[in-house]
Length: 235
Image 1: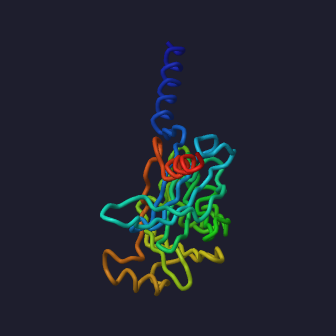
Image 2: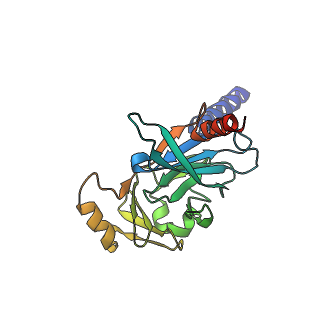
Image 3: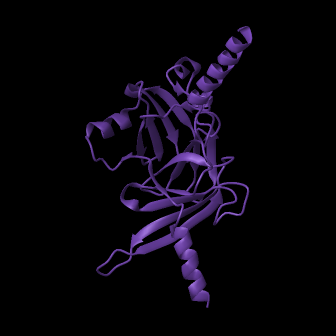
């Protein structure tokens, strides 16, 4: 009887851990775009198509209107570079001025590379661990799971210029400000950020407000199409 109870307890414990664990499969290529689709970042995990390397690889495009009576793909590769992540960034935001900021490590959100800022030529400006910009006193407000700390769940994002900044407005009323050229950050109550307050006061549909716009690239991408076009032109 005692043996049966112990086995039952172990099974129950195992099931409870399984239910709480995150279900992460292998990452697939994905793109992130700016408002209006002016810029697109296509990111390929290590060892995937368009990326034979051991680091995630980003192709960053400036998009344009192809002319004529139909919309056509008119993409110009601005930069191509490996990203700081081990496997893949989980999310990213792209500004209307061609800046890329990635958010979190795929499969382990809220630890290292919680925020990684890239220059307009693709070089890393700075990468932050979550504990570097969210103080311990606020860490209890972050939703957690077996693998991750979902710090930016339900956050809002704003890009401001002159100087270039990204604001992450968090659900508990605090704001993380990141300067895109220097990587410098500030964390505090929303009332401390007057420029952000002016933008929010303008109301919805402001050009500064952005979102995480992601598109799966499991089957095709701009990079695939441009490679095929280049091969046809070389014949």
